[in-house]
Image 1 (cartoon, protein in one colour):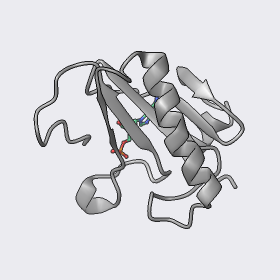
Image 2 (tube, rainbow, N blue to C red):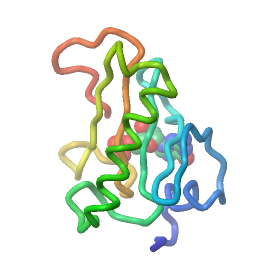
Image 3 (cartoon, rainbow, N blue to C red):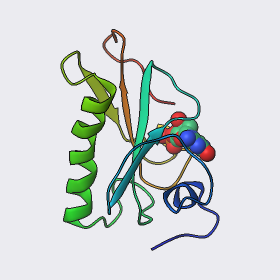
Image 4 (cartoon, rainbow, N blue to C red):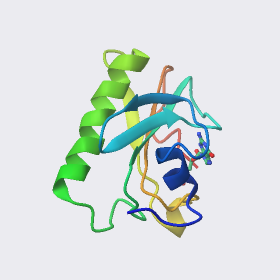
Length: 117
Ligand code: DGP
């Protein structure tokens, strides 16, 4: 499913460019346009869901989480450590309403930060 006027749907479909890190039949991972850390990759499903609390099929959820490990390997942060964040809704400052996991790493973090927007 694709949603009109969703920028991440357009990235998933290749209609607008993104620096892709990983892709399979279910998910795409690409560099965040405004990185907060040396490693800042977004993992999205190709199908549109508004946020992590949407009615996401189990297989799609599993693919997203599996992709996190793949991204960590590709970006070289599996051993050093990384953080995943899913901003959800207004209180969490979700700005793009297509579910995405921020994969953040590449530098020492402190408790409580970074809060991905
Ligand atoms: P959030 O605030 O959790 O909804 O994060 C949305 C992220 O998406 C934010 O870190 C910036 C990123 N972003 C927004 N538009 C684009 C885009 O067109 N391309 C890429 N690569 N990233 C984008």
